[in-house]
Structure formats: structure tokens, C-alpha cells
Image (tube, rainbow, N blue to C red; front, side, top):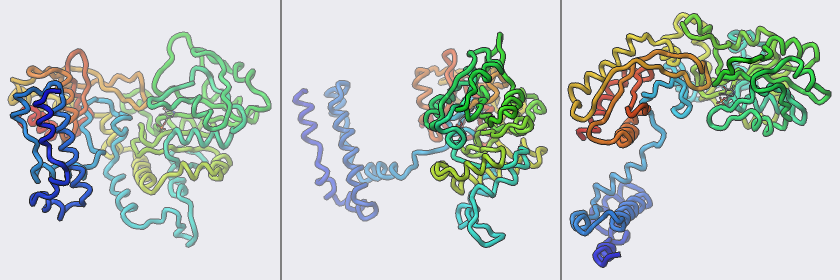
Length: 471
Ligand SMILES: *Cc1c(COP(=O)(O)O)cnc(C)c1O
């Protein structure tokens, strides 16, 4: 290290000295001492790294002073009060983006959540009889009405739902599943691993592309407790294939007195073909086959909060209610209230596109998306044309969240080429703006898909773009 650098290092004040200055004393009267100390320490550390960096030369050292003014320290303190969890603008066009929180909640969900959660509630109190009640019973009537099932139970997410069913019905026993359905969902939900955690033993039958009823028959023995079918929600096996339909498996289960469980993944309640989309199996279709148990997520196509919903035969649900594991997987009033309002929206399908953001985004008219794309494009042409090249192009959005994997959703995107900084620098600036803008990189361009950008977010996005270049 050069003598010069050592000299600058020696000149850095000690924290204790800084704390004695009159300016900083006034901060101590307004903030807890440990926060003030931490902020000063942080500024000192970052100045020290700056001195030590090989890129910092003599000239730069002379020009740059450590800034320990009250203003600088306070700015640092205030940053600690800013929450880490924040809204982002989803410009990726992926509607159910697990990394971005999946389904945005509806207005009704939020207002019900606020009302129930900001005061006391009847979460576990039976107002009819004045005795202790059960938290999941509130949603049983609506879930059975919407799905045709006998009973229902709600847990933390669909992975927890699968875990609870397997542990209750098959711990220490065998569960038969087709090799073509041994799925992995992003974020390490793997059927074989959940199965192991539940204490059930996995028996794989058939091959990746073909499984016949005889394969299930051959696997069955006195240790078999359950037949499991999993909806291959995020991929399709196409071509030379054979699978046993849910109805066939249910018939076979009945003949052999074996319960059948169906993990349907995304909890779709609507016939999506009525909305010009590919049909996803609905929960009601599944229940109509006579299947014993169906599990699905609350925050995928259903459009509600993160939750795992189990519907099916009363006797099995009762067993799950008695499983001590349920205590560890149970949901709180925030989830239940947001989910209840989401389910109520399904009672009248007419208004569903306006009520549930996921359905609104999924069925958004193409010309509306195009208008949003044009607005962004025109703004850039008028105000930022020396920094960004912009084109409006036709592309496809993705549903994501393990639903409709083959669905092509035509959309209009804005494709941006930064002219003064690199693509990666521009991507980082978007990601670090306030609020962050998450687009995607494709063919050397940043793609912003307005399908997942709400009307009310467009101005916010334009402001962020302006700030990137003019702040
Ligand atoms: C998404 C999915 C899961 C996991 O659900 P989470 O709610 O994310 O826990 C399980 N099974 C299938 C088929 C899925 O699509």
C-alpha cells in the first residue's frame, strides 16, 4: 500500500470522536444511539474500502472527502427504516411470477383482510353457539359449494397440502404414482422429496411417456395406501404417450378400496375456454369423477393469497383435521380473510374479470395492451430518444406459476436498446429504481410487456425512466 493511502487511512476519524460533535449530538436526541453508531460505522467502512480499492488513485483520493455530516449520517439511519419487502412493477409479462409474489390480491380481498385483521375476529369462535370454533370451518361452505366436494381444509400452501394428505393417509405405507407425473415445480417442490418428508414410500410405475392401468395393478399390494395423480402443470408430454385418466384411476381405486388423490396444482374454478384460453382442468371437474382428495394452490390461477386448499371426502378431511401436523401448517386470519373474499368473487362469474386481477390480466384485450405499449414508446421517443431506442413489437406473454404451459398469449411489448450504457447496466438501473421495474432481456434488448403493468403504474414507470437519465 502506498504511503499516501496509509496517510488517508490514518486521517479517518474514530466513531467516538464523531459522536462528540455538536451536529451528531442532535441526532442522538432523535434516534437510538446504536442506530447512529451503526450509520457512522457504515460510512467509515465504505470510505475505508474506497481508499483501499486498487481503482482509487492519488488524484481521486485528494478530491474525495469522507462525509460524516449530520445530514449524511441521518440519510443512512433513515435507510434502515425503509422496508426491504416492496412493490415492484412487473414488466416481465409473466402473470403468475413466483419470484414476484404470484397473484396480486383483489380490492375486496384487501378490504376484508384489513377489517378482519385490524380488530379482533371470530377466527376460532362460534358466534352461533358461543363456544370455541374452528378456523377452517368459515370457508368450508363456500368451498364445497364452488367445488362440489363434501368438505375442505386450508393450509399454508399446496406443498403443505400434499404433505398433510400423504402423511395422514399413507405414512409408513406405499403411494403409487406414474413416472410421467414426478414433477418439479420451481423453488424445489419435488414430489419424491415431499413424499419422503411425509413418511410415505413412493412407488413409481410406468415410464416417462407411457403409463397404463396394468402398471398400477402390478404395483398394488397389501401395503398400498393411496393412488396419487399429479397434474403436470408446468409441462406437457406430447407425442407417443399414454396416461391413465383421473376417471379411470378413480374407478380402479373404488374397485380396490384405495383412496385416490389428485394434486391439480393451480386451482382453476373457471372453464377457461369461455375466455378464449386453453382449458385447464377445473377442481369441480376433478371432484365430479368421484376422486377422494384434490389439492391446489390459492395464489395461482385462483387469484388469491398463498394457501393450500384440500377438498374431498368428509372422512378423509376429518382425519387430516386430527393430524397434529395440521397445527404446524395452519393458516392465520390474514390468509383466511383474503382467501374468503377471493372465493366470494367466484359466486358470480359475470363480474370476475373486473374483480380478480389475475383474470383481468389474463383476459386483457390486445388493443388495450397495445395502447399502454404505445404510451411508453411515445414517451421515450419524445423525451429520451438520445438515450434509448424503442420499438413496439408483437410477442407472447406467459401465464407462469405452473399453469397453461402451452398457452400462447399474444401481447404488444416495448423493446428497448440503451444507447449510452450497456444492456446490463440499463437492466440494473431499472431493477434498482423506485419502485423497481422487472423486465426481461431478449435478443440484446430489454423487453417491457405492459400486460402485467397496471394502467395506474404507467406514469410511475415513465417517472422511473426519466429519473434513470435525468436524476
Ligand atoms: C405449484 C404446484 C405445487 C406447489 O404449490 P405451492 O402452493 O407453491 O406450494 C404442487 N403441485 C403442483 C402440481 C403445482 O403446480
